[in-house]
Image 1 (cartoon, rainbow, N blue to C red):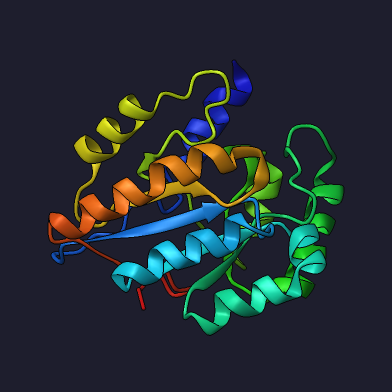
Image 2 (cartoon, rainbow, N blue to C red; image 1 turned 90 degrees about the vertical axis):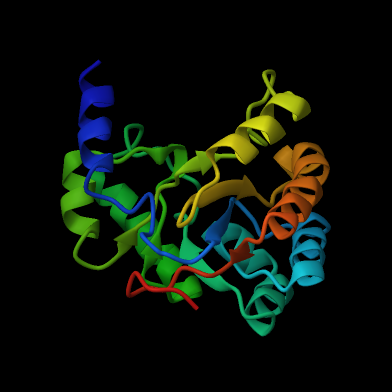
Length: 207
């Protein structure tokens, strides 16, 4: 209970929506890059001229430099998602910060999203001065293992999308089937309803 309260309080001080008068959203993808699904996501975004922000695991980025190059060449932005996808409450503050720094040496970004959307107060105090800590407005549901339902997820996305919303998807093998099923239909809906998708930049603005 204590941990939940702390996380709810900390989320109020992070970025989960970007105010804008434009009809646009900010697509974000977590946990990759991994082969197959990364190329798929990029291809789908290209169809509509959409840009996105990819919160990469340092270990996956290190193993797949060609995919990191692809993301950068296509004009997408990169965020830090730790090196080994650590849960802040399962390791010491020192170990967590060291893991973030290890990822930073590969990713070179001022954007950060904590795995599991969890931060302890000490880790938050250390990270908030260096990073823009990004949460989300709408969770696509592509990572709801055991509870995923295509119709419900797509309906929720459509209902909760609004100007400036930050949308959470994934680009990893673990959630590949769900992402491949859900993403194309959502992107098509965005275009049909006059939305653009932009990157989040490290100064809280967009590209």
